[in-house]
Image (cartoon, rainbow, N blue to C red; front, side):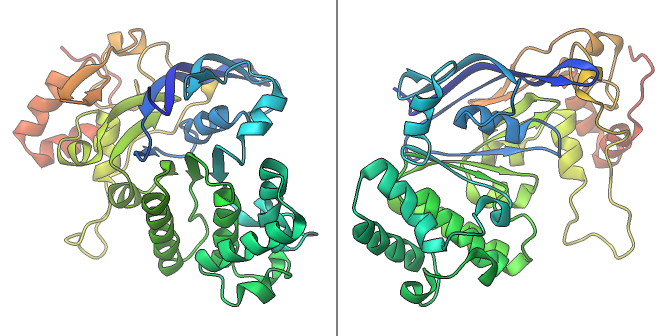
Length: 345
């Protein structure tokens, strides 16, 4: 039995223009000790997907499908039962540590709180374990600084503290939602190295959200590429990086600067803008922005096509994409940048 199994997960939000599907039929499994990355631009549904896993969706959100944690269905589970799982068996590192930490409580008390709530240990024992956790995540002079408040720490140190809070009860599943947002490059690397080290050390499963393909390549073994609330491509990270096939994935890869990118050279961009949720096509969510769009793309939900073992993409124009790739990088870049809406044969 997998640790986590998600099937046909959809999340509907209420907007000023009416109900909108923000997450559409997402599915994946996660085994113990496995690492999974979710990548995509802002608004693609990454955070809402993991918020659904944790039972932290905004008020009024409607969830359908299945989220099974060790075989236990989480969709529709009473809040009291979800609270017993969150912070204990399932934990989350949020992308903005200053809002994740309570400014009026010391960091030691905040790291100790999950231990007291879920493990029932004494205040003294919880403090002892909290200091050990702060020391483990790299907070210098942890015994003294446990009595300090969040504003007395740097951004990188605050993120380390939120990681210590998430690890307090030894969760089986760790969700990290863009944990390096607003940190400089050096601190980003330190935080990611720490997360990878702790996951390997404790045998946790990891779901890592990022818009940075480099972070995904270095941190996880499997990945999902999301757009418009849907998973458009998924598979082993090495396979997706070696052989990306969905036009959106190809667009993301083409937009990355490379070592050979000349100074002043314009990077490739994906044409158009992400439509509002209520304006997404009934078929492929990327239809219209994609240079391979045909009328059928707007109305046909693309089925999964196997690219390689375990590597799946959802696009009805994969043959045309592969033919254009075979014609050369210049032809592919031109097609991706076109975003044409005219009919193609």
